[in-house]
Structure formats: structure tokens, C-alpha cells
Image (tube, rainbow, N blue to C red):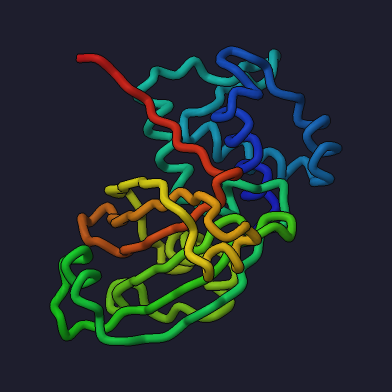
Length: 237
């Protein structure tokens, strides 16, 4: 992942987490260069990304400030941030994957229904454990149609699949339907996630959609109980 993307991801996370609040001035570019050990051009490119997203504004002669966003805008940006994946959400940490399965197979019936594709279609069957700073954090089971998301390689599975979709395929991820439940971990899940048998896990089932309306992902993510949170923005009409 390019350095300016890592920087923009980290600043974005700080804003969404409330470390940088509305109307607050963020550090000057020269200070960000020191903080991230990056060139002025790299930092400027990162900030320009956040300006384009509507998260920050530059005031001539004053510096760069967090924009005072509406709840609807925060919800939109928070949702978009989720689709940058674990690598982006933990921009300041080491993120990698242990690949448990990576194969191509005829789509299972449930996945065919969720993805709205024909029963004789083929999909990637991906199972991996995501590590953050060497700690297992989430186990992901993913089905993706090969016709829609072609040429995935093992290096993409070990890294960022969403990054591959956005940066290499130039496809835009727009939305998802997600259901979250809490249950006890299976013995296999507990072993892979470093939990005790019977520990609770949060399970998120998700269907992701491109901006074309096509479903590109049916996934089930099993999260450690001590490293999962779900944030919702509620508005009243």
C-alpha cells in the first residue's frame, strides 16, 4: 500500500474515532512529515484525498481543519471507510492474513441466492484469518463471483482484497447489507482466533454491492469478542 494512502487512512480513522474533532486544526504539513516519516509531497497527496472526501478543509494562511459534518455525512464516510477493509482500519499497525482456503468452485446454494447469480456459476471460496500486530482478530469466509472480480491472486488474499478491487480493477464498492449476531465460538474458531473454548464471538454476515448494483461479496466474519464494535448513526425524520 502506498505511503500517502496509509497516511490518509490513519488521519481518517482519527477523525472518525473522535481524536480530531469538528473545526479542530490538524498538525501542519511539516509536522505530519515528521510524524509519518514522509515527504511533503506524500503528505500533501494524503491531505488532498481527505479534502476530496469532504473530511477536511484547507484555509489559506491558517492551516487544515476538520470539517463540521452532519450526522448523515459522518454515516456515509464511516460506511465507506469500512469498505477499505482491515488494512485501512488499522493503518498504523501491521496487518496480514493466514490463508486457510483459496479455491474456485461451483457456487453453493446459499451463496448463489445471496449473490443473485445462477447456480452453475463459479466463485472464489476464501477463508482467512486477519492478524493485527500479530494478534488474530477476525476469521473471514468469503464468496466472490469470478466473472465480476477476476484474477484474484494469493497475494491479494494475504493483503487487501478491497484494495485490489478498488485500485487494480477500478470498481467502486458502494453499500452492504449486514446482519450481526453474537454466539459461542466453535472449537475451530477458538483455536484460530486464540480464544478459550466457548468464548463469545461477534458474527457479521454481509452482502456487498458495487455502485452498479451487482453483489460482489457474500461473507461471514467471525470477530474476537474483545476487538469488535459496531457503530450506528441514527437520524430522526
